[in-house]
Length: 105
Image (tube, rainbow, N blue to C red; front, side, top):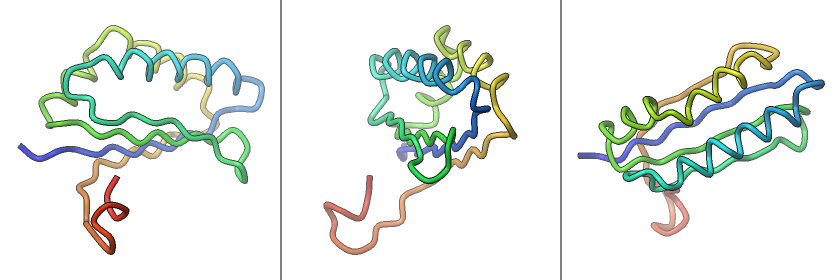
């Protein structure tokens, strides 16, 4: 099976930014222990306040599907309640370009 990459971008209301960050850190910490998790990273924008980007890579679609059903993912419902707008969630496949070591996450 092919690996699956997910990129999620979420803009949080300013008054909920720290709580959302706390929840996201917990979800990511728990996700790192899941079988099939290759990478799961959190980024905070330096030019768009309250905007977080998560980049995930899973060994397979089956592993990603299992991830979505994990109990720790329930915290994402609280995160969603703090959003200023609907999140952008992209399911991606890598397109290698340039240097093999640098061109793919």
